[in-house]
Length: 545
Image (cartoon, rainbow, N blue to C red; front, side, top):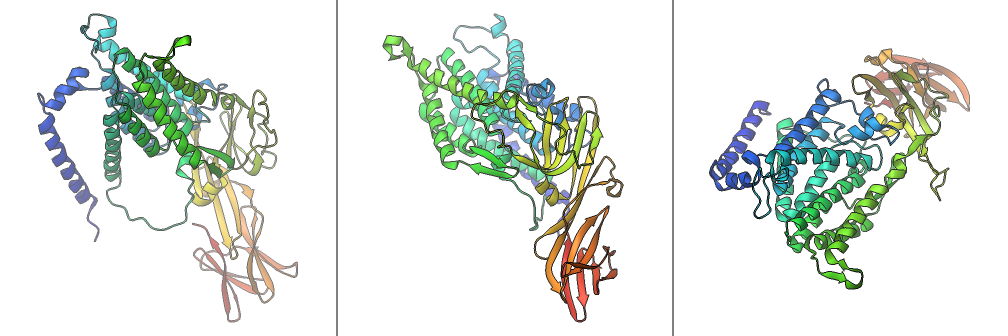
């Protein structure tokens, strides 16, 4: 018998409180840990990081309407669709796609942001300087500067991110880059701590789970991660931290920095260099990515440990200038690669609408189509770019000329797996949902017949059918007769043929009912359709869950 959820919570809370009580004894007011924190942070707290966490959470709950449905916020209007849609470019760095997404980033912000703010310090670190002697040494000004810096990095990671990204993770990676240069081993420890925090969060969210094997639609984990945006934030944090340690005369241990960069880059997937080759096809360059990770570790270690000694005396180039220049060059290269993509425009917003029955919501048009040419094209022709090499789209597509959007929001494969999805549309002050559902009959032999309904009505039956697949014929042949499932209007029909001649057709029977078509009897039992003839009984179709 499964214990009540309250029992699991009691076990979890008891274990955590016992551990925290031990830590509190070690770090109680006047203890070593509390004293160390108060040396750099006002009242021992990372106020700038806490302000950032509160601001991002408020944006999710209020602007993205996460307060209405925490698991499914409004996301589309806040993505970085390109420079022709400033609203998205300014908000993408602070918006999130789901409750898990925002929770993960905020927990990581608390861990890594606090460490980075500790390295920054609310109090002056220069020998001989005193608190409140100037604006630069004023703790309140330094806290405000940190918060403003976080906002600036959030905007930059959206402005120069590759694709319609969304999320605060670019800033989180900047925190980590900053911490790795200043406190490399502590950052690695924080990386492990973040895994502990995620474990606790998941234990609170789902204390006990009984997973079952089932079919599902899964993309490679790295294909859903904005690797370029993460690398951009990481290099911003590295560049700022190098400036800080050089100004303060600090020289981190290069071996520690090298190890910390390597461990972090491998753990957080910065090695996942990939390209998109189709609607749901990707190519991962694992060897190239692994090599780049090792080069990255060496580059940052060299930058952190570099000195002002001459590297090339005749051009007055120091080792520090060379290393810092390479870091900045890498940062600019990562940022500039996104600029052409962010200048994309919509070629023809009506593509795919010819035979579709679209849903209009505000300035959005939502429709379902399969194998239509993606309409995002460069605003300025790219030399050597093959204009015919576009990736086709299949699924629920969202179009808005006003927001420069032509996007496959839900792929056909994902809709086939989930059967029902909700697309939340809107703007800064409004939202409305569009629901898409797919009804699928899988016939014996592997083919499928399906239709797709799309509309704003919550009830499945109230939404019109906007797409019908081709008929699907079962491999099973009974008494020389073929069975075909065909989407017709709002329903499915059974068609019986022999030698390309139609012997009869009828609507799909209701559950536990039967129908005779073309000399064959079809019986429906729950999701299964069986055909009977004399003493023969064969399953010819099954409705997908």
